[in-house]
Every structure is written in C-alpha cells, then in structure tokens.
Amino acid sequence: MDRIEIKAQISVDEAGAITGIAWPFGSADRVGDVIERGAFSKALPPLPMLASHDQKDTVGVWDEIAETSEGLTVKGRLLVNDVQRAAEVRSLIQAGALRGLSIGFASRKALPRKGGGRVISDLELLEISVVAVPAHPGARITSAKEMDMTDTTETPDIAALEAKMTELEKKADPSALVARLDKIEAKMNRPQGETKAENEPTEERKAFANYLRLGGQIPEADRKALIVASDPQGGYLAPPELSSEIIRDLIEFSPIRSVSSVRSTSAPSVVYPTRGDTTNARWVGETQTRTESDISFGQKELEPKELATFVDISNRLLQDAPQAETEVRLALAEDFGQKEATAFVWGEGVLEPEGFMVNEDILSTANGHATNLSADALITLLYALPATYRNRGAWAMNGTTLGVLRKLKDGQGNFLWQPSYQAGQPETILGRPVVEMVDMPDVEADAFPIIYGDFSAYRIIDRTQMSVLVDPYTRATNGITRIHATRRVGGGVLQAARFRKLRMATS
Image 1 (cartoon, rainbow, N blue to C red):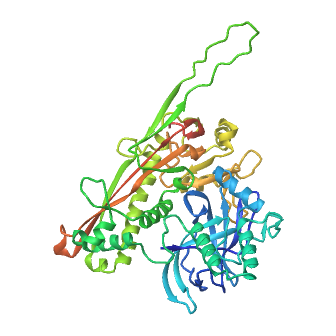
Image 2 (cartoon, rainbow, N blue to C red):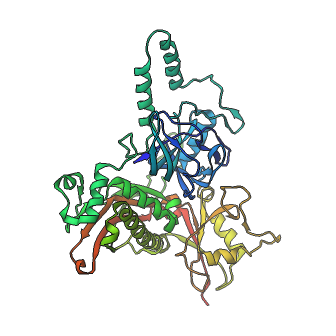
Image 3 (tube, rainbow, N blue to C red):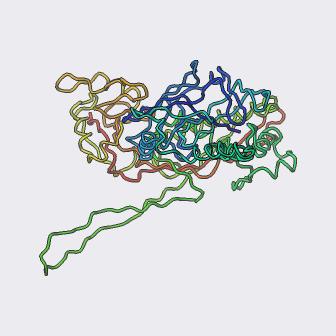
C-alpha cells in the first residue's frame, strides 16, 4: 500500500525544469509517520512526475533524486513542449495554485512510533506528484520562478479551515474537526488505487500472492478476493498494484512510451475519426454560386494485440510471497518490454501493434548517399514538416546512428548535436530533443535510420490488466511452478503527417 507525503519547497522555470524537496526529514506527517534519512537510498531516477497522483496524468519525469540534510531533494522537468497538460501544470505552479510535492511509495521496513504512526527506514519510491493541498501541515511552497509563494492574497480553502479551527479553539474542543480535516487531506493526496491509511497490502494483493504460491489450492476466501480473467484458459487478473508497477518498468525497455500518447481501454478496439481533406471555400460575390467541398472523413481503428509468455519459478522461492511477486514482475516486465519496444517500431499490425516505421503514409527525405549521413539532408527533413508539428517533434534513432551524428557539422562548422547544458534537459540535434531507440536500423544502403516527428501522434492502448495463470502441476516433479501471463496492447500512427523519415540511397 502506498503512502504519500509533501515537500517543503518547489520552483519551476519557463523551460519546465522543476526542483524541490519531496520529503523533509526531522518531522512527522499528520498521521505520525516519520521517514528516516537513508530510506530513499535505493530510489533511482527516472521516476514519473504525476499531477495529483493520477496515473493517467503523467506530466513529466524526475531525473535527479538525492538525500540531503534537509530532506529528499529532487530535480525534474515538465514536458511542456510535448504534453499540453504539463504546460498547464507549470502555469498553475507559477500562479501558486499548486503548492506542494507528494510522494507515492511502498514501505519495506517500518516500526511503530511512540505516540502513533511509524518510523519508516526502507521503502520503494514509486512516483512523485505535484499537488495542490499538502498533507503535511507545515509544508508550503515558498518560491516558484521569481514569485513569492508565501503571499496570502489568495488564501486556499485549507487555510480558511485552519483559521476556523483557531477560532473554535477559543470556544470549544476542535479535535473532531481536526481529525476530519486530516482524513480529507490524506484521502485527496493518496495515489490512485489506495484505499487504506495503513501501509499494508490489500486483501486482493495478499490473495494474489497466495495464488502464486499455491495455485488452484488457495482458500475460498482468497479466491473470492481475486478478479477472474476473461482468458478462456482461466486464471486471475493481477491486482492493480502489480499491474501499475509493470507499466513503470516497461518504460525502461520501451522508450516510445515516454514520448507517445498512452491510453487505457476495456473495449476490444478503439476507433478514432479522421479527416482527409480541407474544405474548398472561395471568395464570392453577393449572388455568385458557392462551390461544394469534397472533404472526406474516415476512421482509424486500433485493436489491442495479445502478448503472452510464461515464467518458471522454483517452489522454494515462491514460499516467500513478496519476493515471488518481485521476481514475477521483473521477469515479465523485461520480456514484455523488449517485445513491445520492437513492435512499436516494426510491428506489422496483424498479430502485433502497428509500428511507425512500417506505416506507408509517412513520407521520407532522401539522404543522397548510401552510407554517409548528410547534414543538409537532416535540415531539409526537419523543415519539411509544418511548423506546428516541427516545434513539438523529437528525433529517434539507435545508439550507433547517434554516435555518427555527434560528429556531423553544418556548413559553418557547428556540430548538429548539442549536449544538455542544464540538468534535466535532453541533448538535441538542430535544437530538437533526441530519443534513443535500440530497434531503429543502422546507417546502411536503402535503410531508414532516422525518423523525426511529433510522437504524440503515435497512440498506444493498454487493455485492462495483465492476466496470470499459475500452473503448479506441469513441472511439479522438478520443484517448479509455471506462471503464464497474458497482456493485450495495441499501437498505431494516428496522423502520418506529423512524421518524416530519412532514406539512405541505394548502393
């Protein structure tokens, strides 16, 4: 079960770079929990930046995390040029409407604290959110850009309630109001899916851990807590906590998820209306005949494709349920992530998602040589896109091609590639960010080693949750349990005009 807490300071600039203290050391939250210094030692960036703990509202990424004497200090970036919601969040921070940071985590080691609450010495940091109402009574944003965030000309509702409590203290016992206010604030700031104040696994997650260990021999009470999968072979859906963790691991193997648009659906397919042409309006006189427009409308249907595998785990390992969950999650995430990464680039759209490199509607720019990249060709490719798409685009290529590009110069002797001079900002080519995708082809004759585009026009759809079927019988004589997993994910290019590829010449 994830708990959350609030930072003390935050700042953001026009480029979307954001810094702050996600958890101040030396003080307890409203329920009495204290996190010790060193508890975040295993936390590694990048971490997702959410708006108000909404897993469907990812607005940026945290690139730097460090424990200091003050607390957990973080640096990240709002993706203001790629995600419209990120620009809105930046404006809300600068206006003082969003005043805090809140962390979502799963506790690994905690002891009861005298006076209530816990002392947490080890945890798994899952995400850090920008929030409006902090759960810690002393947590407030002090600055954002160059604006004094302590200005109280626009006092939030929570401040009004605290003022009301001060007034009530003079007249009556305010303990009931204080307790109610604490519960409201804690509930508002919980990550999606949290239903308990205690940092303990849900009944569903406990039941799922038993299912991994015992298979079909689980008690009836655990069976009722699980969600039955629609797979004809049977099995159960992984609990929401496990499924969301798998999505986070997939980003490590499938970088397109960090730049494309991702949606969830429970339907067998999603249809997106499309428009083919513009209207045929003309200037006319008062009585002149108007011309008809031949505008055409169509549709693009994305269907989640099925990805399946199984993992063999020793029964001895499964005796420790939490470790078994971790092993299953990491093994499936690695395999699924690698397969998805390839499919999003090269998938044919039949048994797998449609890859953007096989979309026939995406135009290309000729490089002019079979093996040597041309700086002029890259400039031509970039400016072949309309300005709106060009200014929101990013380059995609593999590491080998990126190594070649780092040596290229324009006609004035300036390198096309530029390093990042500011923490949290990506390296650029011709002023636009670069995304390294291992599945892109190398520089060779008749290949398309580079693509540039607005990747928000590539849509990924995740259908429901991962389903898991535990088979303790097939390899029982070897002391092995086989765990089958199935997941459905689709993808496709919604607007080919937002992309353009570089085509190498034929030798």
